[in-house]
Image 1 (tube, one colour):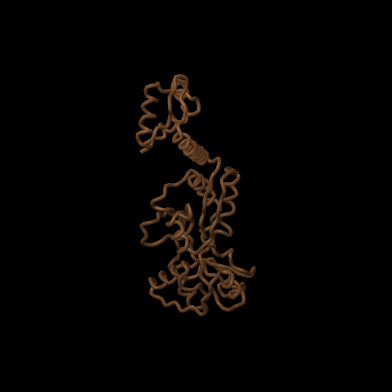
Image 2 (cartoon, helix red, strand yellow; image 1 turned 135 degrees about the horizontal axis):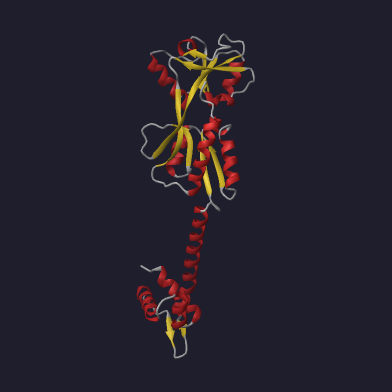
Length: 301
């Protein structure tokens, strides 16, 4: 193994052409520096210096090694400075994942506050469905994600932030109008529109409705929230979604009420890899995110 200390000693002697002057510059005794150079020459299997009565000069092998040694030290020093800057939040990048439900209205105030406090940190955003975010965080592509709770995965860690309660969304003038709460049994008597199977929202609904002992036979199954909103506003039925998905629906004539008996909710939290330690930027983002969530989330009725 070639030690960095030996390389730095070699560079000092090469620069000054003297073991005495080099030992003074790097703060080592001359015998200790001589030992370092001898150890380096033994490891490389070549002589790096030729000594005359007046000075020490590089051999041909030493000259060849010089450029590589300079590059090694420069690259390492650059990495050290970069890491120190990142630790001090003077530079760096944070990659955030978020389900589209929250990307639209939950993230903007948090990112704005983070960027105001740490303008040198680059923020990258990825909006994806929950399953995609789980894999992206696990692989290290994302530093963390704000998303629904995963099930039975040991490769990612999840810290609960809040519960997003489900509401029933209906057009203005519907028989549910003017009510703050609607029983699940009442909702299921309506024509129901919902997201397709495989979406986290649909998985939560199916699971909770089955637990309640009821049947769930949607009239229409759609891929995105905008389509749901348009069809509900058009009078084709009602839909059940998490409260914080409501702003994503198209249409200004839509109303909502909390689904009860039972309440249905999905747990939303902070997802990160189980093997990857948090960077200073990730920790700073969390510290800014949590108090903002407490004041901006509207999950209670």
